[in-house]
Image 1: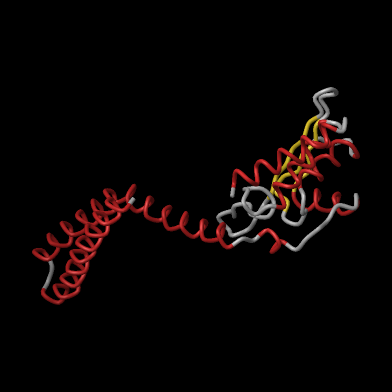
Image 2 (image 1 turned 180 degrees about the vertical axis):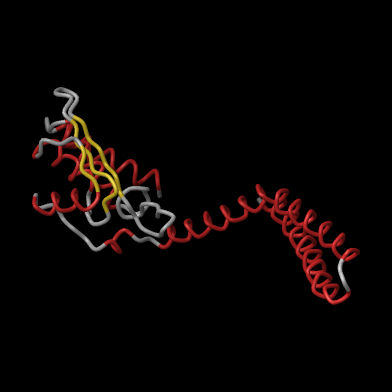
Length: 197
């Protein structure tokens, strides 16, 4: 499936070059195909940010003149590579970003889409998996310091049990019991996550 799509992308660019088209035209057409194909991490099918948005970037350069154009952080331009080319050829800038780039693209007649156009279920599920993995990794990385803090608190509370009056005993005992349960729960979770990740 991916190899087929990559071959098609190459064929698009090659066909333009074969007819004496410019390298810029070949590159733009090839990348536009990839931006329109949800198999690729470009355009439709781009990965989500941690906030659950598709923010797209693209850049293009003319090797003869060294002119360049790019867009960054766009969410509504269907084909960011075409916007990058427009920045290069129709503006004094090298880069435009966010809503400014989107406004420019619209003024240049490029296709603007609702941000939901870029959504694909596979990429959304990928974000959810990444968030779970981040949470697990964060827990594993900080496990020792969390457990050390709990042990210190328990030692302090146990010392307080010896020194305090009987009225405070029940309150402190409840807290130490809860800390013991948290220590055991997190130790079990730590072992599970270490095996899984």
